[in-house]
Image (tube, rainbow, N blue to C red):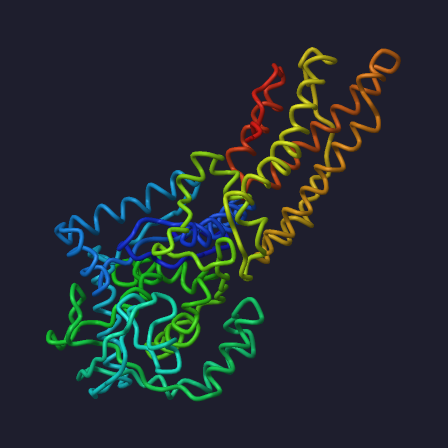
Length: 478
């Protein structure tokens, strides 16, 4: 039976398995995880999807260089992503791989319907193709003849392909975007896409003749499906497009696709046009996050400045990394990150802020109340300010609001000096500590989507009713 609760379906990009996870792939996945946890807490029927993209020339090229059989290569590298997300506290409801039978079956059905729509035709395409992007590049997109994202020269390809009549969908897309039937966030990305559409859309190739390790067109085995279109359909294949229509009809359309700003044309122009062509509903919204730089430079394996999120989580805890990434850079904007900045946030905000408040309150409860909390002060649990920001992907503002409460509580302790007051007014101190314990429980609830382990630790210790001096939440890093 279909779940009658309000549904919330959120997705991340699926990540190429030609390399291991890095901070750039962890970032949107953590953000989507926070949103999924937030909606689960309020009782919604949540489906959070992530996964790996495993077809295409880029994957084949990487497997050849490694000297490993391609099936073993994609299996091992996909597992690295799944393991990394576990380590980072990311809890997807489903993990899709494009080499899975359920996905291949759905893609074949999708392309069959696309051909039946009458929006495909055969033609010839000629242009620069970047294997790193798995897409064609216009001359004006190149910098000194190189792809700016991968710093490599694209190949000049001339092929006979199948094409999709994207040029017919400009007016429909503009109408849907401008009326917010299909939302693009933040506003700067919406403006970018509407300007792009107004310049006029060109038909696009949906197949290639020379691609390695790619799916064949159902009706033309000499042509392989353009890898980006194969990948985009994961959002539908994972929820039963080909084999579970009840589930598919329940969860589609997606509430949010969370993507990087470099792939919004695929998600905000090509993807919705394809869905319109086969008669499917458009996703409700796409949110495009910004890029990280490291010391002012774009992160690059060549420069050796790529941050390993698993390594950082091992050193500072997964919760600390999650907090840092969402607090340091407003989601949707570009920002500079480094281990030095992570350490500074860890020591100031976590160890000296939240950690200090928790230690002070629990130590005083143990010392002045024999560690006993018989009952908590009834708290109003005002989640409004922080969670309203979270709902709008403004994680930085929501966390800022929570840390204002933490700073206020630490200042209150400094001002009231319970250690001096306890001899003369023990009941007043008890009331103060019970109020602070209730505030900490509220803070733990507010933080639970972002810092699930820390939140649970605070909750379990305070609700145990018998507090013994607990270990610090965060040990300062020198």
